Amino acid sequence: MKQAFTLIELLMVIALIAIVSTIAVTKIGGISEASARKVSLANQKAVERGVAAYLAFGSRGIDRLDSMIDDEVPLKGASSGFYDLAGASLSKTGAGFYLGPDADKLGALDALAVSERNSGLTPNLANMVFLPYSLSADEAYALGNWGYRYVMRHASYADESPLARYSKGDDGAFLPDDAGIGLDPNRSACIPRAITNGMVVAAISPFSPAGREIYRDCGQNLTDTVDPGGKSPQEIAAAYRADSASVLAQLKATGGPLLAFGLGDRASIVGSGDAGLESAPYATYPNRKFYTRYILLFRVDTSTKAGRVSFAGVIDPCGSTVRTAQAALRQ
Image (cartoon, rainbow, N blue to C red):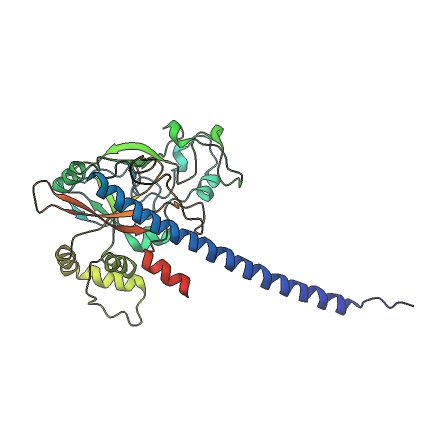
């Protein structure tokens, strides 16, 4: 007579299968993410080469890059430079960085769907890498003079622009055309806005450790004057802010702030016949509800009447330069 398995034996087998399955899924997930990061790094390098070639080929700037700022941030008038938003940088009410469409302005769209499907910038960029920066008249003039005349701002209203509408993808990640506005954060930057004096743009923070690392990777050697021992990134940033005058003086002496703009589908470099990029790539390893385009960094030199805009590098949607992305892959 065949003896049946006991309950304890069955539970042991089920537990072993669960453990093996967990290990397998973890390994496969790790391999998948590593592969996505390798593709992202290759894309990042290709964007860097393509932008450099485009700018060298015709001595013109790149128009219609994506703004990383919410579409309702007001002009700052004659003032220029970094400024704090008193916590509003994490708002969806038009007071700071782009964090997705405002649910109150999207008509009948479900607020939960909006919040889950489009959160705009990744938290690392909004919290630890970017700071708002108001352009001076000279900086705005230099950008326009070198061909950087418009930025594409993100749409907040459901009926604001037909360019914000698109078809639902196979993964079902975003809402279809009949919902009114495309909730894909990569496609919602669609309204051109002229760059002008007082416009608020995203810039790399010279105060946070992550931001300072980007400056160094882009050739600006900001000397560390704060001992990081035992301090959190927020505490280190607060210490640098307390000594902001010397930080900003050092930043000016090494080349000035790095301004950040997203490389979206509407940028003049995309689809250019002579030089540039066939399409605007995106990174797949961040959560796709965030803005996943690559971000171009520029310096503006206003020491001459015409000014000068120079390309400094590319960061991915999580704020990694090519060097830090390479280092992460080696770990």
